[in-house]
Image (cartoon, rainbow, N blue to C red; front, side):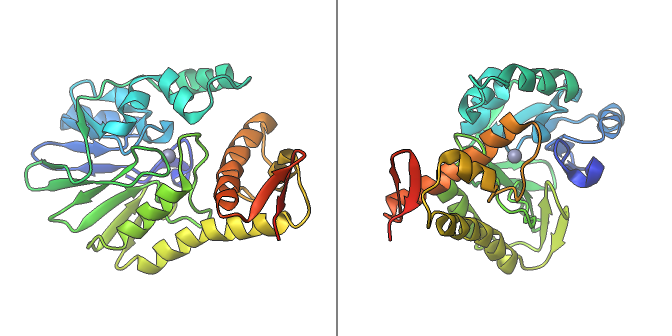
Length: 285
Ligand SMILES: [Zn+2]
């Protein structure tokens, strides 16, 4: 199901699986169509690929479904407070506004997850066998969903967009994200679904995965270039190496750009390429 606004946040392209166990993956768009599916067919299973609002926001429309998610993201799907905590949003001055928007504007509700799954776990929906591929990095419990007989994979937020990978939560990990992208190269399938961007891609995606990982490496090399001169964290954030330009509200931009930049700085620091001195980051050569 194509997401509203081309699947842009807070919408996503989602999947309806017409099988003996009617299933929806990441119900996060077109609520009237999702409601119709439940009314006419009766959705019995909802798979959430991770805890972000643009993947779980219409869970509430499926009162009779079994909810499935990776065990590492179950706490944040079950509780908005835990979501805010592991994302690093709790304690930010704008956290109350964020919570209000999540609940009142985007319709987020806490979900009781019935089945916590792990990497390689399988479920039969009838004609389709679903296999879960744990692909952490974006979030700790992010997973892709493989439809074995159909040779199809829902990639969720490994979305192959030109923007590239997003790792703006405190619990996100660049190293894990890169490893997950690499791992997908060995998954044998013909059809790929993304939550954002194109929605469906046919054929081999090896080059697309490499280009997507390359965005991370490119951001890091541009950051390293920028640190030829010593820079404060605010100067690094204002450079907008991840997002390309500042956006509003400024406090939220600072948080997400800063969270992602900090992860690059940590990688560069542990490689001995940058160091912090007198409150400024600079390259070491
Ligand atoms: Zn996400």
